[in-house]
Image 1: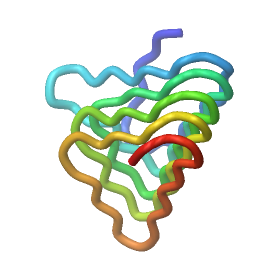
Image 2: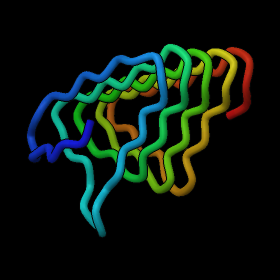
Image 3: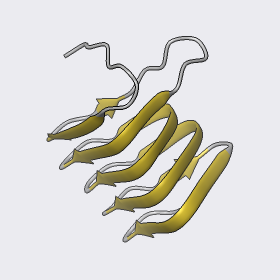
Image 4: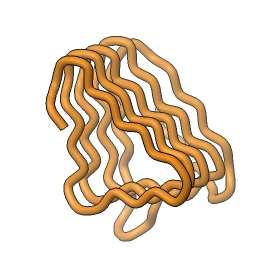
Length: 103
């Protein structure tokens, strides 16, 4: 699936495979609410900026190439690891859980 998504939206994706977010040039994924859930794959994105962010990779990795800025953040992996390359910014509440991997 390939789609263009405007700013100020709610996005909820739940699949069994990999989720890869591609940001063109210097644009950012700006949303009100973002939920990415993968049962058996990894989640990769470059930049995320939103009010509420839930990222769950139950049997894979979470890899954020640049930064996450969120008001309310929940990141969780089962057997994988979580990696945020540059910056993790949380305004109100942030929870990061890695049951079997590394942070």
